[in-house]
Image 1 (cartoon, rainbow, N blue to C red):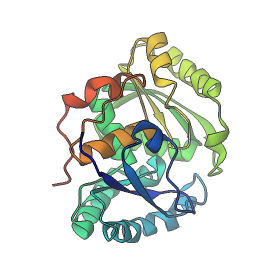
Image 2 (cartoon, helix red, strand yellow; image 1 turned 45 degrees about the vertical axis):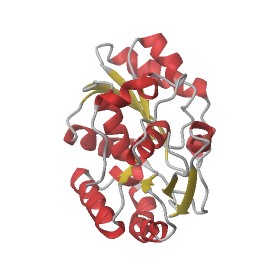
Image 3 (tube, rainbow, N blue to C red; image 1 turned 180 degrees about the vertical axis):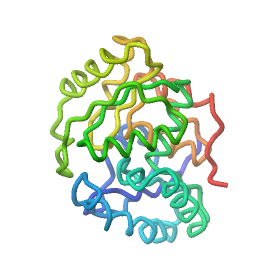
Length: 247
């Protein structure tokens, strides 16, 4: 395991704050955050934050970081697949570093566990859910069922309990029992400790935004990201796909 890893995080918060899952999962890593201030879980609420992503990444690149992860699933998919790909290209060109996004991380995670026909749980309302479906389909997935909490306030997902998320997952799995995997989309939903119980209940892999994002961030710096106790993706599916190097 490499020592002295430093990863820059473009975060959706108004303040420069590291999401709690990162240090919990990888306490040996130094994370440096830069906030872009998402206002709400709506396209209008993302716009200013989207425009701040590139300047934030450029500022992080000057802090001697090894790689950069852009936290925020809906923030990075809401303008569509092509815009997301252009964003990645711009970030890599501007910083000269390995870069990924939370949207790319969940795609990598689903590919790693071999899930192409998926069910999806989200925090979002209908408009953002429609954009997520389009992004996932453009990324090569068949979305068999999608259900959201209908939230638009930026801080609202953090108030949903593990039981709430489990109930929504149960609804999705009931609608589409033939899915090959479950995606829980929204970095604000606290999912780190529920992947393994959901996998045991429904016998399918579970990929969720924040754990997948930090897993992918570790892969940017040449680590496997593997951890025990947090579901199949972190348990060892990391070795199934090629590391995203940003080159």
